[in-house]
Length: 113
Image (cartoon, rainbow, N blue to C red):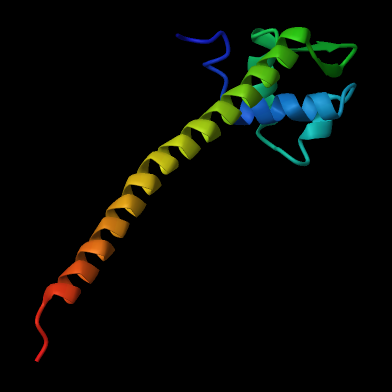
């Protein structure tokens, strides 16, 4: 299912986080750290995730919701990757254990000398 915030890029999420951390800044205040921020700010204003009033940039409630959903999405992705790793590691370890047991059994049954 497509989310309301699927079209937001990682850079735009980073910009939202910066605006949340440093409210009431002018767009120019962000240029030193990120010279390409101007286009992202325009996109975020159009998406109503931030607003500019009296020359100051602030995050909207919709922007806060987008950040919260982004964090949840990252956590879900990490959890899914962990599950995938576990699904790979457990059968691999079982196979290795079976191989070791087989080799030991073979070595014990082979006549020496």
